[in-house]
Length: 216
Length: 216
DNA sequence: CATCCTAGGAGAGTGTCACTATCTTATAAG
DNA sequence: CTTATAAGATAGTGACACTCTCCTAGGATG
Image (tube, rainbow over the protein chains, first blue to last red):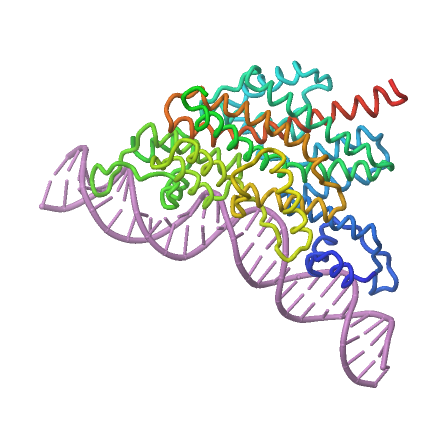
């Protein structure tokens, strides 16, 4: 199909698709002539994935490019490919190295990961690790406790989530579909999970502050 | 303390504090003279909360203003105050009403919430609800299933998270501290949780694709 | 009292980022 | 040959979180 049709079927404006092509979020179409290109179903699928990453996942364009590169990289094994793709997501704010809270946060993060059985080293440049450290440092700055005891319940929840995630991923046959699903589900279930958390907080607060106010 | 000292102790540039004052994210200092103001410890605490919301939580300034207003609103009961403050957080992308996927997503969201025991109506303008619908619609657009069966495990995880959250909140005495803690912990544990999810995905993928590749 | 220094306020400017509008050129169709 | 359309390049837009600069009013000091 032509660019115009790709635009129509995806609902993405032509100018935006051109932008994605320029930014290498979308592979170029197959050249028909010097001035015309043909796009297939996989372009459509890729385009929808890009939109999901950027619009729902708020993933920066540069990050999305890395993630997509990892998805397509057939040279790695499935595990490594998945780790790279998922790890590239949501770099979040960098921890401030000048802040003394960062160093303490780093130690606590290492302790937590160790107690979770993490054996792959602390990979200082793995984006989720940096995100974790920055978030813990922010907690410290606000005076909230963040020791292993407080964090472990969240880690257990994360573990349960990861099992669900991989269950969903394994429903797919091909390696490519699996990595794509891992990325898409990681990103798209985030807002689902976080909004459900809000709802559940309200329910739980009702249980504690209203229903059973006098110990019911 | 003066603005300059507030800036020094918080690490936030003077110009940025002025901006927050202008945007009403920070209450004005107590006027000493017509041209000088005095800021107290609660300004410092509030300033750090604002920074956490904006920098870690990526909360838009307008949203942060609403959240802070709800925190300070003493006219509501604790439950309502908490619901308003937490609900105002992370509005996320609005669902596109023209998209037919949105309608289906809305029905599925309602079904899920009903099966979770949600009894407060579907509050179409409650931001977490909109976020949920938009995310489900995005899943549909990408062709991933999102029925109650798939979503329930995530909802159960969210429930566990909410219980942890409220446990942490109830450690505080005053109503103000509790609402502040609810907001801060909701926002600051998000990156913690999401990065732990990444780590756990990698561990789980290792378990499935490497360790037990041939059925171990 | 004059002077200088600093605090605080207001408005405009900056940087970033995801688009988006325009212009150019080429080519397929008529 | 002419014209509509496609693709590519380039510059502009809008939102947003700051941030810079100027201005004015006190307060401190000689």
